[in-house]
Length: 352
Image 1 (tube, rainbow, N blue to C red):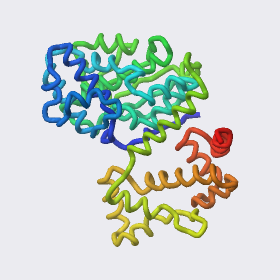
Image 2 (cartoon, one colour; image 1 turned 180 degrees about the horizontal axis):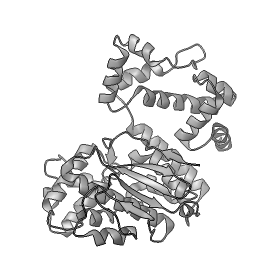
Image 3 (spheres, rainbow, N blue to C red; image 1 turned 45 degrees about the horizontal axis):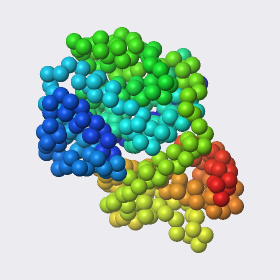
């Protein structure tokens, strides 16, 4: 049965760690470009590059990318060379979660859900088909002056990480790119293991489905569960919201006598904020979110609280969150957390 999984983010404009910038600065230094020139116009200091908890705006990393492309413009296959530097350890807890996943398919599904913990600018959409897995790599939102570099970097980095997970080079079934064939096409073929096609309608790479089901050599269920929890906490911290999104989120948190009344609809929230529904949607879109995304955040938090702290059945939790059917809630909860409500409750009970 075919299945499509969108990434957990809508665009590349999400806060990110400093490791990717540090990697690019290090690469540039090896080729005679100083850290000062790489960080020009960013407001970043060299000391911040050594801060494992450092967090920056995506536009800052984009400025570093532009500096790199400008300084090393005469270096062929620059995106490929830089992309090969991204290893599992570059991604911190996000990478460890992938390493400990049961299979490559599970790791890919997890990575798509928590893509905001990566450094990508391209947005991959996963499609599981009967005969292959296809990753559609979207670059439409990337500025044109660095688009090809970032497609090459991100696709190469994705392939490098998947090869690291398997413990061997992963040959792709096929690879296609929107840009014209470059003089260094053989470098891309070396990475992908297949001759790419260029000038195509979309960027994509495909993997044989049997590879997705192979157990990963470092899979560990306990480590995976621990990493998943830490990734969720990290995402929650990064998603701290202000402005209109905070106002909407505040109104979605229930205030009934039992603390668990179904959240209001978008029309009701808009009226409470003295604006039309259309205007509210426009403001939320400008803030990089949506009513649906905020509702999911609130529902997930409430669901986790009810499953952990109350004896309510799964169907009761679903009703209190405003779901007409338990099956819809179960599907949504698994999309949020990677586990069913029943499995989540059992796991928390064991921990207590």
